[in-house]
Amino acid sequence: MSIFDTFRERGFFQQVTHPEELQQAAQSGRICAYIGFDPTADSLHVGHLIPLMGLAHLQRGGHRIIALMGGGTAMIGDPSGKTEMRKLLTEAHLEENIQGIRPQMERFFDFSGDSLLLNNSEWLRNLNYIDFLRDIGRHFSVNRMLSFETYKARLEHGLSFLEFNYQLLQAYDFLELNRRHQCVLQMGGDDQWANIISGVDLIRRVEQKPAFGWTYPLLTTASGKKMGKTEKGAVWLSAEKTSPYEYYQYWVNTEDADVERFLALFTFLPMEEVRALGALQGADLREAKQRLALETTTIVHGAEEAQKAAQAAQALFGGGGEGGEVPSTEIEREQLRQGWGVLEAFRVSGLCKSNSEARRMIQQGGLYLNQHPIEDPERLLNESDLQEGALLLRAGKKRYHRLVVRA
Image (cartoon, rainbow, N blue to C red; front, side, top):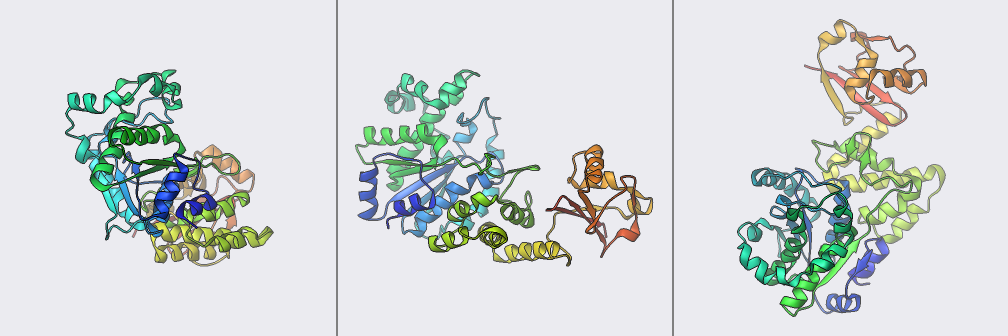
């Protein structure tokens, strides 16, 4: 199987340019491919996993990869999929974000050889505007650009001239990478199709060389929810933003209908094993979810943290143990000495958004203290409730939080 057969089998395919020519290029030797990541936050999140895994599979298949940080393009903002202009970030802020993302990239890619982690600010920051318009802008048709869904959707809400330039700059990135590193393939989510094919066309026009584009599907869960979203917000790859335990729990809670598909996309397990795990039924499917959670958490946080998260989950759901990796918040002992309302405790923990929500969940039998259901919404917590210096709160069947007395 070629790497692109693997992509199709595992679910990393939506659209491709020049498919036969690309297949032939990959079979005749190593190719160089890239994906761009705009550093709009100091961490990547679960929504970035498909491009990360796709690029990682390509590298494992023996090809050269470039992970491109958009320190230049992020100063403008990609209008794709947005109904309003993105918040503009300073160069210093973007550099801080890149430094936060770099170690996350190194979990997926090996940069010790000829694969690269680059920043497009290197060539975009000091572009001569007149030369850029004459050399690059003349190859773009405004009529064609406005026919793309990216711009058509934004015209209804207002599209700034600043954002209108984004497609030219992303295409120019591809041209620069082709010139500097013989990069011939740009990959990305399907919402990037217009930007990607603009870069392919630019290289073929200017350099008279082969160039290709490949997009991945934009995934939702089986129930139609956006990937990587929870009640608390995005599921981050940063341990400071989403703990390894929370990250593990996100994958354990995968819907039954998504398990096999997610094993194929988000782990490096052989497809024979993926299909065997996906074929499990009923209670046995829990084993497949645990394997999915363990593999994905290992990739992002390392084997040690993944094992600790798995053990903490087992301890909690098995009815014992400390649950050391459960999300926690420090509290003052004085709060407990004076008597602390259980409603406020659940609100402070983040398990409930308000006292009224906590009260309602108690009435429905959905809140627990130290694995025991809470029946009285007026109950006060005190020092006698502490177990090894902490209170273990639970909302529903699967959401836990520890309130730890400050030492």
